[in-house]
Image (cartoon, rainbow over the protein chains, first blue to last red):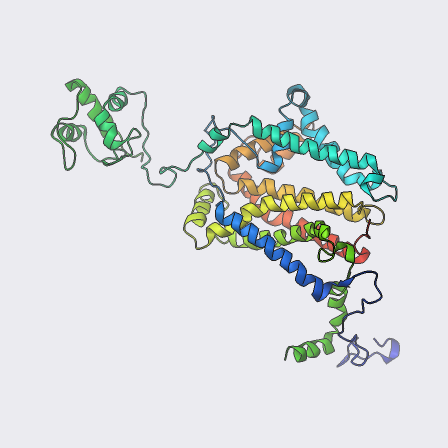
Length: 264
Length: 224
């Protein structure tokens, strides 16, 4: 760029047309051993490694669809919480006697803090110029110990978890998908007990009243009298006279079923 | 044709030194798996970056459907998973990528440690790398809540309880993350979304840039 009084602007640029860098690769013949150029020789090889890795990655994705449980329900008190697998070791740490309860600070802060702090400060703790792991036994030993501790606590956590219970919980149901009407079922009521005791009812309408071969009872639009009539005389595919209880029970049941109306 | 376009641009902007500085550098024999198979351990860092790029791309596509709101978050993920063309693949890649990136990053950390590559003059780059490690764990933690399903909610509850048990600062951290001192709900979800999609990626990009600039500046560490 021209400076001082000779400075020009219009049509001028600090890029000179005559002494631009020629677009040729550097000469690597004077480098030691089999050194090669990153661009494009080595990058092509890296892409091959990347392609092989990507195939494995995609196979994993296709073979195991990512999990999705039912929508979050904070009122569910029986749910067994579990963090993602790479936090299991920290989670497990908080279950040991001297890292939980009154010693919670040790498990939640001191141990992870020392581990992460030491990791960050390694260059300032291990200052010898020696690079081979065998020539610096202390850092090597500490790192191996830390990795072993991570693997061990993760394994402990996996062992301590009831995976059948974990897999069974949180399943997506029809209700989550908006397929069930929003009906409050009083499972302590007499009518509910009568319903559950009638094998012929449950067989077709389901123990959860959501219907199996017969229609869903949740959110029906019948009155108690109409329900009673249907139970006694049958309707469509429903046979007549399958109810085996007393007349009073029939009335209670009819009122219970007629009460399964959708909440406004 | 391409050469002419290149020359036309180069004549005006002198771009050759820019990209030659970045791309045209030496790869020594001891890190090249083509010459020593055991040098595949030097691939872990590159693969970590490769997965990170996939995470960014798949994440960008996920936000086209995802709704960060307690009423619709789960529904939008369910829709994405079951109705959207290739939605299951995109979400699957983001889900498995989150685990794979931790694995590759861990292996990369071990490689750097056991080859003693963090030693002078590369102390600063190690520090930046540890920062990237922490950000990745943060991305994993915040991303886990976003589908708003049962395990997401309860894992986050546990995580926030652990954070809250830190002496003195615990309650402040909890309120900062959850948006409320007692409730884990709508506010928590929007905060985690913002942290996962804006704050942590911004910090990650900055640290990755510094990480790579330092590598180019110092070159890769020599053979043991």
